[in-house]
Image 1 (cartoon, rainbow, N blue to C red):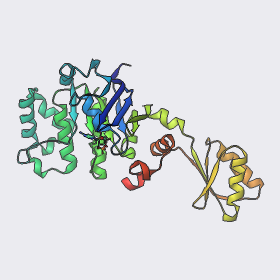
Image 2 (image 1 turned 90 degrees about the vertical axis):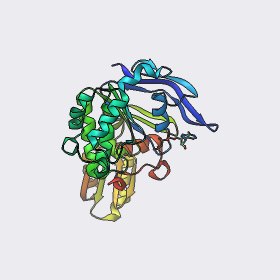
Image 3 (image 1 turned 45 degrees about the vertical axis):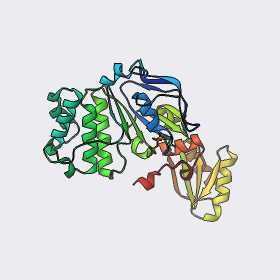
Image 4 (image 1 turned 90 degrees about the horizontal axis):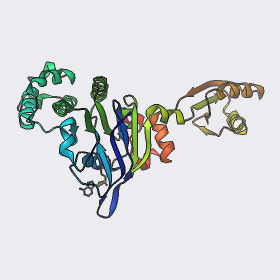
Length: 313
Ligand SMILES: Nc1ncnc2c1ncn2[C@@H]1O[C@H](COP(=O)(O)OP(=O)(O)OP(=O)(O)O)[C@@H](O)[C@H]1O
């Protein structure tokens, strides 16, 4: 599959600090690709370079096959929402899009279908100022869709939204991918993207941490087995039973937690029984994207600035 975004050694230095530090990107066509990293990781800077708004200090990049030194060639096929939607509060959603279509030289006849696509047809004639934050974001995405783009770049479209608003954006991103638009969407909230992205580009301090299908990242992680003995005095013995069989275990919150293939759960259960230990809980769960990110970066929520799944709820 051809890459719609690619780069080699893309870098941007501000005040002597490499804020984007040698990115080799390859985002395939037809996916929702999540651009994930903590605050300040360099996501917005990268997106601005891809849009030709700022020049890289080093490296090269291509969007839809054209080098970013010639943005006029590809920008007519790229929709973007970088700084949140700039709309006129007193005008309706439809009138705002109409104005942007005229200013941008886009086909005004597409406005109705675009409003439909972002789920705003029923509120299209209400003033922008009466919209919820989620509706405002979706109108911003509608504006980015006016050029009928092949590629959509969105910077933190779920920032500040309530859970219902986040779900609406997720559904919209899937709908857009369904009609063949490649979506490259940034977020510092892993939990928001896990559900929607086929592909991920994860960065930290300007550097690539992982790039590839979401499934590949999840597959790299061993499932986590949690076993709770009836008698907490058995915790150290249970942990040793797992560790002795080559599966490192820790004792956390009254449970033994083992990073091992799910099949090991049965073996652990048998071993526990043979040692007279009764388990009152035994569960294997696949690590989520957040676990995978922390495993890859060797970081904790505290030093990445990433909001945890729990905190995001
Ligand atoms: N014009 C600029 N001048 C100086 N430093 C800048 C400039 N733009 C960005 N930076 C710095 O570069 C780093 C990366 O910023 P960037 O906005 O790209 O991060 P981000 O991943 O988008 O984070 P956030 O989620 O907070 O927007 C930050 O430390 C920021 O302060």
